[in-house]
Structures are given as structure tokens and as C-alpha cells.
Length: 377
Image (cartoon, rainbow, N blue to C red):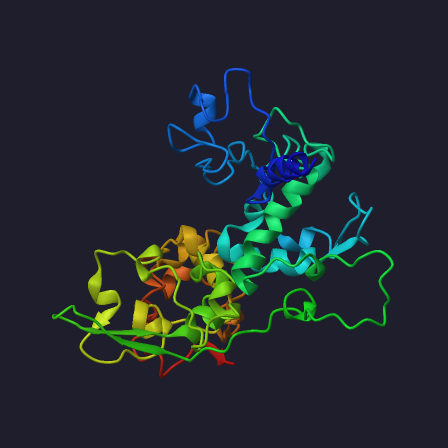
């Protein structure tokens, strides 16, 4: 009888939770553990030619092609998700979806957890595909319990180096007065605070011609409207929150400047001395006047990922500047009664608004800007 118990224990031990998936010792008919007839199906999980029960050579549990075509923002999802399908032993898990989703853009967005969306764009619930009772034949689809665990355990183990059930689960019958040893607010209780950054960073590079690179962090955030996740990607929570690390955490994973800027134009970033903060007139040669100074950058340059350099010829954008249709006061100069009915070409030769207007076409004794055709506001 004792041997029978030992054999039973060994069998149960061989049923292992690997990467959150419950791996059962049931396989297709052409596979015999210990004497495998390897084929393409087997190789989707096993990376050696002779896997055994004690050394299965399993690689990361493969998803089904990441069939995710939806486009969502984390604000569109629920604030919390109550996971209560497996509540025989534990109370429902309250998952802070909004908090986790708001940080997911750093590592791929929605697809970090959701790997399938329907043609309608909707993201189905996990239990639509993953059933409570596991399919012991199709190892490509873990049970509902396995799918939940594979989503959570990887990050939490990397963070705290343990996977105690009580961190997420509260046992049924436990008293509310019992103080948990796990600080849940460390992960799920509060929004992530903003990380302070320097106004600018100056780097000394190995580029001998112009070794100094000045990165104005404030300009990129406040003027250009970049979010943290536009530059800081591929990082994970463990870099700062790993309980085993003793040194001060550093933000190191970020995209390079060439992700947005032309890598063939070295002088754009490199110089022999520190570069000043961005000034539209100095940096581009086009000074923003009264009307343009409050216009959002995207109106002229589109998005950062689809950046364009617009024409400096006003009529390429403003095509309806005709007599009686244009309010001249928006440029800071209200025309007087002698000029408000005149065509643009009388002052703006060839409608080239990039150069100062002239009075020579009509006046011999007047010049701009000493003599204004109206009132400067």
C-alpha cells in the first residue's frame, strides 16, 4: 500500500504547472512518454528530441498566433475585473484592470495579456475559449485556471520571487481581522506615481566630430506631447520593484533618438557644446507669429510617428485668402478703411507671405513697418 501511495504521489508531481499551464501526462496516440515519436505537433512544445517525464524540454507555452487585431485604449476597459469562476476554495479575486492596463503600454499594450480578438473588434472573456475543465488532449489551450495563472505568475514571481496564493486569493472562511503579510497596495492598490525627470540630459558620446548630445526631456513632454511609453518601452516592473535588488533602480530601456529623427542627420542631435532648448524660429527658420504660437504641433506636423515638414508658404495651407473672406486682425494687424478692400497682392508681392509686405506698389513716400496700413494690436 505504501508503494501505491508513492507511485500516486509521483504521478501527481508529474502534473506540473509550467508557465501557468496545467500540463497533464495525456498526449496524442503517437506519443509515448520516454519513447517519443517526435513530429511537428510535439515540437510546438518540446525543444529536444527525447523529452521525458522528468525532463520534458518544454519551451514557453505558445499562444495561437496572437490573433489580436483590435485597437483599444486602456480607458475603454473596466476599472476592475472580478474573477469568480474558481471559487470553491478562495474568495473572488478583484483584479485592478485599469491600473495594470495603464502600465501595459510599456510592454506592448493590450496584447501583453489579451492574445485574441474577434472580427468585430471585441475582446472575448477568457472563459469563452478556456474552460474550467482542462482539455487533456489539446495542450495548446490551457484550462481557465492555467490561463489566469500564466498571465499573473510570471510577473509576480519576477517581482517578489515567490508565488504565494494568498497574494491574490483570500481563503474562504478567513477572518477579515487577520492581517495579511502581503502588501497588496504595493502593486494593485494605488495608481503609479509619476517618475520625476531632469529638465535636460547631456551625454558625452564617442562621435569625435561632435561628441555632445543634449536631450531636452521637458521639450519632448511639454512641447511635443510625448507620453512616457512613447520612449520607454520593453521594460518591466521588476526593474524598479524587484525585492531582491539592493541598488537604486534606473530607467534604462528606451527607444533611441533615431526612432523619430533621421539617423543620417547627425548634426541634428550632435554638437560640440550644449544645445539650447527648442525655439521654433531659431530651430526651423519659421517664427511662430501671433496666430500660430498657440496652434497644436500636430495640426501642422501630424503625429510623431508620421511627422511631416509643412510648406512655409502660407497659401499652401490657407487656400481661401481672398478679399472679404480673410480677417486680417488675426495676424495682429487690423487694416484701416483704405486697405481693407485691397487685394492681398498689393502689399504681399506674388502672395509670398514669408517676406515682409511692401508699400512701393502704391506709395512713393511710405514704407513698412514705419508706416502701417492699420492698427497693430
